[in-house]
Image 1 (cartoon, helix red, strand yellow):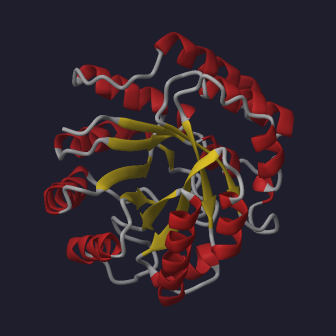
Image 2 (tube, one colour):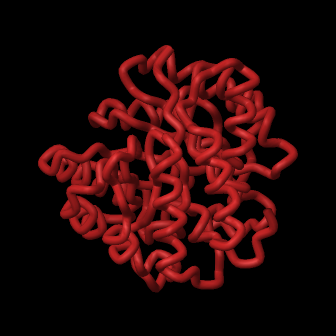
Length: 288
């Protein structure tokens, strides 16, 4: 079994909040997360501030982060080559993430490009990453279905994952953008892809209603998944999906499940508890 990789996603949490969070609060919060022992921190994105105003200060946030002594690597999300070029200019960033939707409707909605254009962008960004000593993470959004009536079945999702692997992508994260995954289709996708692509890391970026999160995490774990995205208190979600009921998997729930399964995750619980408390003053109207 591969080592567990827990990716904390303040970027995904921030962008789900309409009220602008002060830059200094973002910096203080992420600096606390950097002390917790997560594999990576999904800290920001290089996208149009008109599309995601909350991410307009990503560069300022980056400049305020204290990486010395932290075991965590930084991950930034991009939607096109221009954003990837900007992210690649910073040595502090190790991973560049790109959302590739297998729903044509959502791909256009999320990145202002169809699937064919998105594949071209992946090729360009992968080439850039190889030249810049970065690692590209591709998120297959709508991997478990979509609300638009676009075609979906498990074979379609696994087929796209294999195509991305053939393109040289080493980390592929299956994203449940609107919370439609079930334990059954989670098991189907992960139990198929992980044995067939043993050299590729297949991750889980699940959105869920709180009451369904534990069973989804357990299904992924039981199917061999070792890479999980999460956000404290389940804050955030995809602003392009427009569903306030489905947020990120709560990191607290994820760590509880890992502990119950007897799995070592490397997160220091006391430092993490301080991050949970800090989230109460970082996110508007948060109650922790």
